[in-house]
Length: 294
Ligand code: FDA
Image (tube, rainbow, N blue to C red; front, side, top):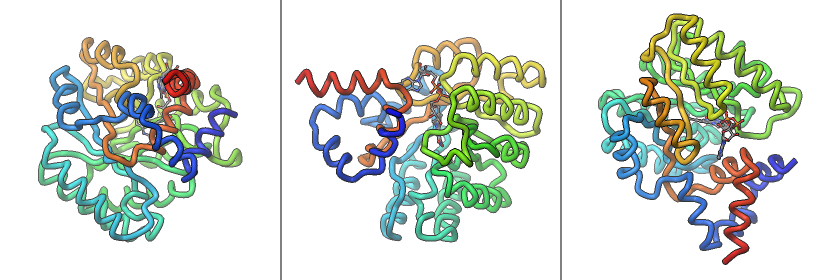
């Protein structure tokens, strides 16, 4: 219920004005969003962690904004170290305007990334964008075989999706949006079971699974499946969000696992922050307390 309210608020301009105008919000934002992306990437790399960087933005409604997003990624790619990845939201690149525009813009980002020896991953967004996301991924892969795609285990067809892309770089996550019950599991138990089915498919495949979760049980299951499928630590990676379970990120890296941290930056943080709050009611209590206590 609370999750639903927060995810609905993530799309409300009125709520955005209210939350963004509070000077106290900044402290909560900086827990999840990098103030100085260069310094954060540097710091994480120094600690033996890999990064995927997201220039915050989504649901762009005009071509100029989409071009601005592409330019932001081209500038970002110039600053990233070897081994880095960028995470791209296709609605930030114009998907709501046209699939061809998003494809062309994503291709420009992929070309610039390839020239620097870096990779690109296509984030998964709302359910009505998933067909286009996979179609764009499949087209991009012809030129850029290492472009990654995200699958959300809350979608009922997630395992079939995984089977279709099991030779690619695939990030598996639970899913952070609201989707209709006809298309998505809603109980945490069903979402977790689907996650495990997807993990089995990806670990058995020929691609590169990217296990994006903070859930300790799923992390253990992923480790066991990797052993079962004779994948060494270079054959898959864990991914976690900047600001979430940082000690676990270091623990996994310390035992030799590859761990990539998803680092968002930029001014358009509102929808991202609301999704993080929706994931964990304790975060909301912390946020509310910080607003009330000042
Ligand atoms: P779950 O929500 O069950 O959390 C497990 C535990 O992790 C919690 O008990 C808590 O301890 C901790 N935790 C989780 N979220 C937290 C938070 N926000 N703050 C503090 N603690 C928290 N989604 C999507 O729809 N499209 C996408 O492209 C992506 N991309 C993506 C990349 C990466 C690297 C990650 C880690 C996640 C995503 N997601 C995503 C988000 C994902 O779908 C999901 O909403 C969150 O990861 C939370 O789910 P968990 O798997 O962590 O489990």
